[in-house]
Image 1 (cartoon, helix red, strand yellow):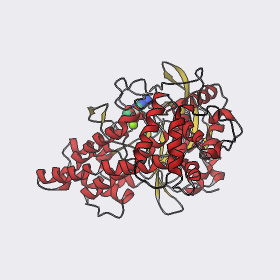
Image 2: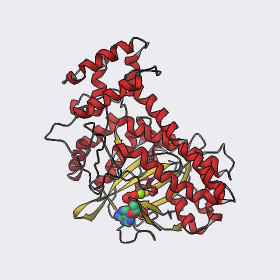
Image 3: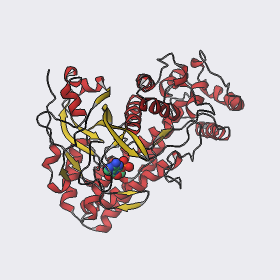
Image 4: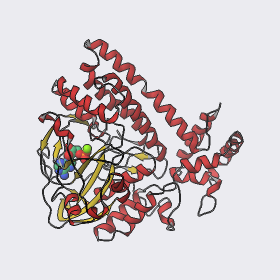
Length: 477
Ligand code: AMP
Ligand code: MG
């Protein structure tokens, strides 16, 4: 049995980038789930994964040699308001492991106890958000959407208080880095240009190694482009992140910090799930606008490295930011046209797409299900509503599809059959509190093949009935 080999390159950065902090041991850890496929990619020994030593690591009780736990510092704009120092308040970066492909991956525990950045928080997580993040982040990955990954979840055997007593849990997250727009803002707000330049070089080496380590504008361009792609992909599956604060915006363009996130059921463009997002700042349709707001914060942090003359730096940053719209809209259009079987755009396609989305809004059609039901290749099954409200639209659409070779295969490859719907996640969490993980495990299984119906259980693939709809998520993470 081999334990994984850790090192921690983040500790080579200046001391002001992190605090040394050790996870607080827990009483009676027990494993809920382990991601064996990911573990193998990372080069973990499966025997070690399921050993006492494995459980000890995933619960923060003990670590293999080379691990060097730290909490990373960052700042951020939360709902538009400036927070000068946030940082990992309940997470520990244990270090990196080198995967089989030679790349380094950060291994982080979340819910592993207080750190110097905890403020008044307890440093813990309860089982609900841990299972939600495990399931949703792995689903996103299987849907082809860049994201942090989930390697393991454990219950701690301890109680966490969130209005009521709940089972404590810890998630093990994996990502190429955990650097946020807020990490740059932290040093920028302290006018610490030297540190920004070190953070830039570090970020480039991990996420954009083709760039020169000092190329601030190249970096800004690259982050903007990655985020434009990412948000278009969120839109394509009806994903609402829910807390797009700058501290939850990753500089590698991957989805990070799953809180009160959810996939939309009915297509309601201004849909919000999070109970604390009272003004709809982070609604579904706001996401492409809010990300630009966040990217402006990144651009401001980089200004001193973009050009010595501030006015020149601003000009260059503005040019870079102005490219977001085209990248986003190109990606959005390609993706949504594929959702209706079109492999390329011809005149009139955008109108057709807009008409569809408008009708879907008027009829509060289920976002995921509508694209499934439109595809005749799916007519096998339990398709219940014949989409009568689209009859007129379908005539025009069918005519247009005559120009396409294999539109329905394109649709099958683009439109997921499975998304982890909110009502199912809520039910899985309620069951898990009582010690029953069947639904959670089934959801994880279904998420491994999102473009197929791989499990018999019909309920995993259908929209919620009015009695089971869950339209709000709570932050009590
Ligand atoms: P989040 O909403 O998860 O993105 O967290 C925002 C900030 O609050 C981060 O700095 C977290 O580390 C911190 N935080 C959230 N929950 C806790 C907790 N239970 N204990 C300590 N810090 C927390
Ligand atoms: Mg966060």
